[in-house]
Image 1: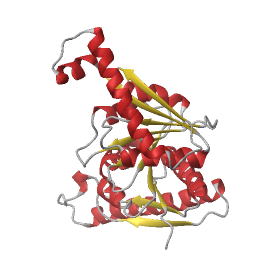
Image 2: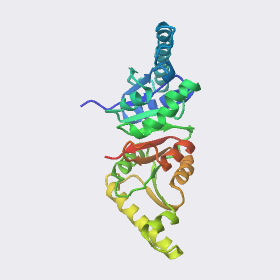
Image 3: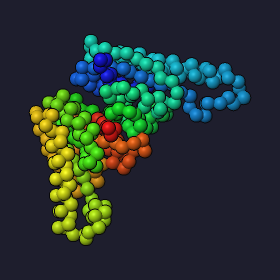
Image 4: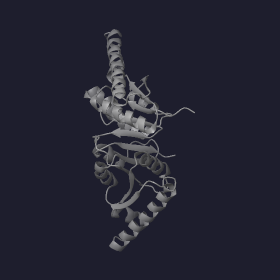
Length: 288
């Protein structure tokens, strides 16, 4: 059975090269090959001829494709320098960048993108694309931000829906085990939303009851997974406040911050906040 690859997207920018380096190290950690992809597409306003014939468009297209090819070559060299001996291949993607990069994750162990690209065109390729990919790719997606060279030996996982977090928790446990790291599982809540939803009065005892119930549900979800990973030390944390802010703060002392996603709706408030303000790599995991 073939080993699933880790896939990294590049546009040649420093941001994307940082993501490629991270992906190369992950490939070594997971004993997996690395596949580097890049998309070339005309900007929307260039998609039709404007009276000068098709020659100009073809010339622009040639330049964009040449830049894509150079980006792939540079990224492959960068990955090889990061992880000598790693099996690396490259792939030229067709179609619109967001969809093409997202689709490249089919059959992948993980898809890795930078948080933004370089310049206006790079922003199209890996700024907006990273957001699209983080909620549409069929595999876990790592968005690389402000990576620290120091290992914290901690993986953080945000749990919103304790009844549908199996895939997210399993991924987080596996990553913690590979890294010989501890796992901190966070569930955040707000009095206003939870008490209103529960239909009870706005009072301290009621708030404590909700926190206790959430903590018990979180404990049950963790116990369902933890038996497979006995060496992973787990800390549960039920916090009052916005989940995105809580996880963004925690990401400053975690090697990886993991959250789940349900369906291709686009980034919700928690994902949006975390992708904008995290201090390290963030992985979104599709529901099983």
